[in-house]
Length: 392
Picture 1 (spheres, helix red, strand yellow):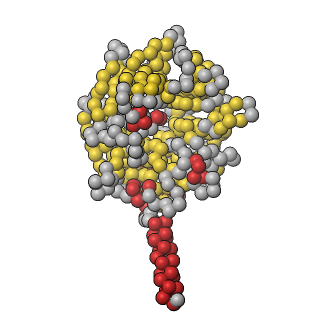
Picture 2: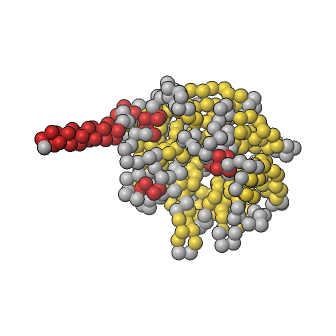
């Protein structure tokens, strides 16, 4: 009897030690408070920032969590722990960044400011910075209300934030110097609508046009709303069977509102789930008269704006064609495509690649030391990547 009791006691102690070890697997030196970020000038040495969070269903107990992970120039990471926000993201301003969670907006720069919001949010849509008004914004798909749907918007700067509402369900969005362009979906009318949102002292929503489609039922928006001086651009797929899909680029003239459609990719006999971009919000960009789009297979396509020619530019080296994802992310900036990648055979499985859009070649690849520890650091919760921003 005593032997059985001793064995049981040892087992309980072992389980407790293992649980404690797993819960404490993130080194204390990797976790920072908001004040420490400012005091240590973390942004000065930050190469990139990654947003990790639990999913909304993990926040039922009000214990969801997220991390703003600062990747340093020496490849190490330090993280700010926050509350959870599924599909949360990062906004980069002139000399500051915005980090968000369901309850708070944090502005980080030479000084830090944290603003507690009255109403919690659970699903993010897009954050951004509007240089013309020098304002940050964050949009959320908040949910159905009595008279339809509500997408709340937090907007402001280091002096404070206001909250307003867009009364639509948003399926895609994008930013310009002065506005946020959104694509909304009306489920009752079975219709997509393109709208423009401006914020200054107040928020305004302007109707642009309805998208000419027979039905939205088998359609999926795969990229942010993009625009140049003359056109708006949307990338939308139409699923024709379980293994077939046509990805099209919709071009809408800003003055005449004339709409044209161009085939970008035609998938046949493939697992369509594997083709879905790593992140819809960061899957396309315009650079040097070309619109670039990267799918979930690591294939980069271009649409030449003057001639409308479509070309497969290049593919990521050894990109997986599996439906299993490992927190991969993409980000376009200044003629480079940055990709957060994963390889279980590497000493540090997560690494950051950059590829030149003009040359279609890899320009850099650096390990991210300690990111896997943060991703797997919580015993009871699982975090996933939702955004990547590269600062230098």
